[in-house]
Length: 410
Image 1 (spheres, rainbow, N blue to C red):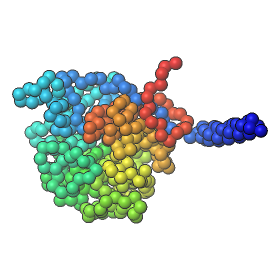
Image 2: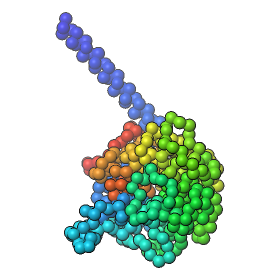
Image 3: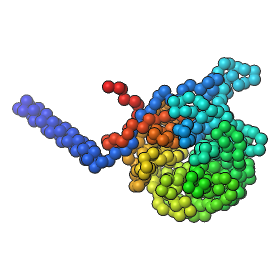
Image 4: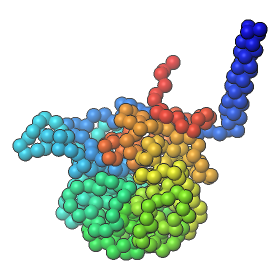
């Protein structure tokens, strides 16, 4: 009798297991049959190559790719600890290390091929650099989110909107020659001041109109647009296309009605080839989409229970002609999300918290090159740039891929 019961239980367990397996297989087959695919990536653990001169990176706060597929980053020299800069101290305390110059240019192989940046005549260098963009003409734009003093903003998601030193953006040539400053240091009068910025986070230049879009940002709560040659003001708006309002909204509550204004920071504004502007409302865990004139079109929320520093930090487009996918850096959940641009739905995500290749500590900025590769930077104690190699489209079988480590060669 016992033997029959044991055999019967085993058969039931086998049938259940086969049923579960069949369901999983059917779901996976259905996904593949439906053509539910997304770009696939693998981290390149050997990129970039080591920096010369015992140089190291501080908070790495922006990344951009130019027309030659050179990768540009900006980092905060002042964010390094004293024990990371022994060779810079007076008297010299050790052989290693020193802060690298703020602006670094790499080739596709990861070689450092250019470096410059810092205070100079004719312009106000940011107290706390934030964001770098190389436009279609090769000009280099730099923002900042620092207040008065010499130390960078450390708690990026929770900053007091007053007394910003960094009320400007700067334009340079690729060899670091100063071209133009928009705004004056410490001069902002708030989110409806059309002459100054206040903690601008990221810039984007439209090659069709030569207009400069600024996610502005940490002190202000708006998108503002200038002529990229003259710096002349064009227009600005807040969430839903409203006139910006600097009233303190209080703590983010995912169960409350949707905020009618952006929260600080307004962290990115990127324009697609079909003239849709995607704005990162970071602490509200949402993307809002606009026409270039500020007309609100739609919004979507991503992991809305995310508190802390929010879930939508930066965006980049895939390199197919339709720009079918958006890539979103999420420095709180430590992932890169791959989003269908038409539906604004997350298809899959990769990454995990940590300091090994393919992991993240506060993944901050994101950019793509002409081959579809992704480059990310990390702020706080992350202090690095990483490359994720595009491996083509593949069926989506899991929402969370974890660390996308290179597969062994067969």
